[in-house]
Image 1 (cartoon, rainbow, N blue to C red):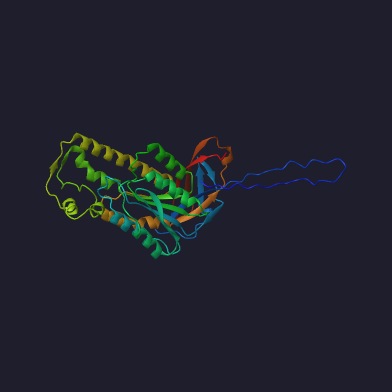
Image 2 (cartoon, rainbow, N blue to C red):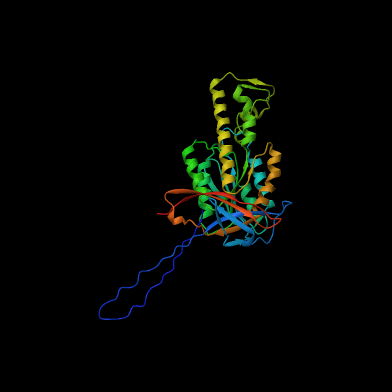
Length: 358
């Protein structure tokens, strides 16, 4: 949640006299502005042009507001690639790169794009650019890793998107949302900080595919070929002989009586289920989109849909009737935007976590 506070002052005239006359008390007026992205479509699902402040009604905690501005601006899109994880099965570096490229190629030419990846650490791979060739080159520079530092990635992404005075900000996550260190409390805090901004979050999730792949192993029986002991990217780094053994195809069903292994698989599946719920909620409460493909082909096809949602955004501002400066501690504001113009369909539902600045 972003808001601005400005001040105006009025003072009386001070007349020079032998006895100093005190200056009148300064009157300060606080003004605040809440900003959010609103998606606008026609009844056929196409982008709706020329939306004005007269077309929208804003409800904040069931209190009606009128927009103060409605603007169409190029998007600023940070694409985050999850390229790590010890227990990944479906998620691969090649697939994640393909999906990221699909998003870039479908965005509008005047959109600014930055690229970030995370595995053993989170890092910005490509700075802001409107040159799609540069963004695609940055995606190509991403590398795999054994760990998945999701919490660090969310923290860095939020800081990166807020460090410059950007508007119409979007965060695209290509991920399963799990963190190798299991930092549930830190993960919650990172998500809450993200929800306290005007960033829309769009997720292309691996969770369902990963959970489906691991399901048979939670029972100790699988009719599928045994899973690879390590991703191909890691096997390729092994010396000759060892590499061939690790990459040799295995066929036939397997039965595992290893209780420790089965327990580990069940824990992994539970982690994926929790992550899926968190990612879905994050996208919904930030007025983004949540894509949950069942296959890698579907995931690639839906990458263009994410770009479509991003490029249907207007930046809408309004002044809250309950000022932020009156907030005690951390407060939640539920915001809905509806259309009063025939043929205009809007998507704008956001939950803002507001903490009054000290």
